[in-house]
Amino acid sequence: MRKEKLEELESYLEELKTVKQVRKDPSFLTRLFRGKGFLSSDVYECHLNCGRIVVREKLVKGKKDGSAAIIFALTKTNEVLLNVEPRVFTNETVSLGFPAGYIELNETPEQGARRELLEEHGYQAGEMILLDEFYQDEGCSSAFNRIFLALDSEKVSEQHLDKDEIIRPFLCTYDEVLELNKLGYFTGANSKLAIERAKEYLKRR
Amino acid sequence: MRKEKLEELESYLEELKTVKQVRKDPSFLTRLFRGKGFLSSDVYECHLNCGRIVVREKLVKGKKDGSAAIIFALTKTNEVLLNVEPRVFTNETVSLGFPAGYIELNETPEQGARRELLEEHGYQAGEMILLDEFYQDEGCSSAFNRIFLALDSEKVSEQHLDKDEIIRPFLCTYDEVLELNKLGYFTGANSKLAIERAKEYLKRR
Image 1: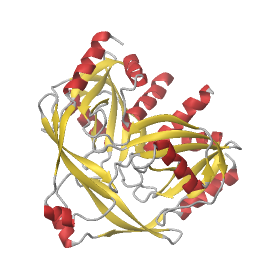
Image 2: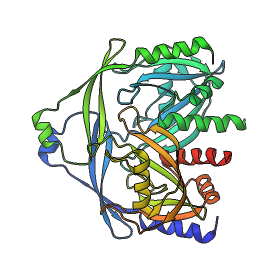
Image 3: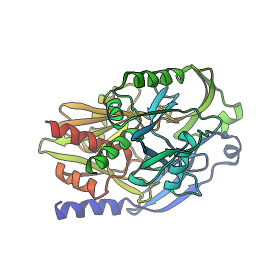
């Protein structure tokens, strides 16, 4: 990397940093009637290092930021645990993906990942390896997702889902996951990144 | 792929399809006071093929679904066009990424990608290649993003941003993009996927 280019980049990053963020209170009536759903948003006035002030809206999911754990789980018999779930707003209305879920405020990302694997599949993971982390939608959200590789997962219980959750567990081999990926069965950003990171990691082993 | 496994998968996908979707009208007061921001949501009652009914919320961004185009643009002199932008809700509050933006209702994804490249960098693209497409957040949104590779991009005008937009253009070589990626400068899901797909494509050329 050219030294002057890295300095140029760092100067832009410094210039556009937020130095102060003020949440703007919604009006009393908006607070009262804005709906009591899972999705909501808050408005912030953001003061940048360069002196500019911008107003941005932040997505809130059930009072949290919506950070999720995505788990590429291998069982002791070398199968991969997959989910088939309704995804009602996609063209297909249903999709194939990985066990995943929101990280609770009182748990670490790894704890959240282990809990989701247990709830959605009844599997307990052995070693968990953090493969990557990334913002899901950085323009309007602070959701910071983690992809874990779960090794030696073992069936210890039944599936335990929330009452509005529907997941069909689907198990296949690692090679079949890659084949299904080539066939276009995985359509979500989280799933696509999980497959790339798992491929990179497992190739190196 | 084992035939019986593919049949099992297809049966789950069929079973969990949505056959009917009914948007639930918010109350008059909620409609009146819910706030007039960019982010909002609608509630749908979804009837699945298996008979179950689930209620899901759909994220709306300024009356659209928020589908975006992300552009990995190479110039005629083989530089890559990057953006430094405030990302006020991330830990870093600022990030490095690719030219990108929401696709308007009256344009194709490619038209949207060309317009964004022109607005954000003042560059006109030559050939555009669709590298991938994916749902950004399939649980609560129908946003379907496209990653384009723009070849032979050429400077034809100044930057033309919306009044609340701030972008510092940053140009470097393809190898420097890969180096910055290894150093952890790219933190968004869209950027990470764009780099993977560009790498795959350019390796094959």
